Length: 300
Ligand SMILES: [Zn+2]
Image (cartoon, rainbow, N blue to C red; front, side, top):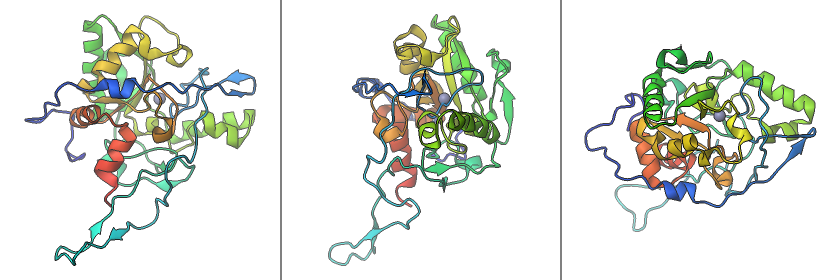
């Protein structure tokens, strides 16, 4: 699927069949509490809505995956017997969750659906979505903005949740680079850069800057979802885990996948990737980060 033409519609023959969500959801929980400055904090790419202080903060294991230099040119392996087709590129392994500032692979204006954005890859400081729109237009109040590319499916998600009896609300949506600078520096002031990196996405590294990530909660419960034991066990959270993909959204940081996602379990954080990609990711059983890497970027 080309991201450029992905407007969220399901193409012919794109029926993914039943999603194997159990592979994502049944992974063991690895919850570790980290206390910073006397506060229990949340680790994550979410790194907080304004005015809230998440309270779950598992430490993220770093540098656990096989490492490679993401800036290095692709390696090639010789083909046996001197194939006439020439050397075959060896797919690059998923980068380890190191703290780097490597420019994202691809053009965020064109490749917003497929970009790998993590602790390694970063968006340009001056990059913002081409067009931001208020979520009120699809009945989600709160003064939030998202990228225009996802507003229709976000509305569809909200409508479907309401129809299922589990209305949802937004806790956080688009966050600019500048906002993330303020957020991150606030954490540095409280503790240290080292500690801050564990509890807040560094500027440029948050999926919220893409304008396609939302933190969701139950409309009937104003409690920030990260203050719950496990949002995915609430009616709204469970419904999202089962149905968000149908509207083009995937849970970026599923349970027990810290080593691959670079962040701890965040059952409230959903990224819009379009319906085709969301269906494919869900059917694959892979984390979104691994799926996007292996599908779009490992063969550079
Ligand atoms: Zn988030």
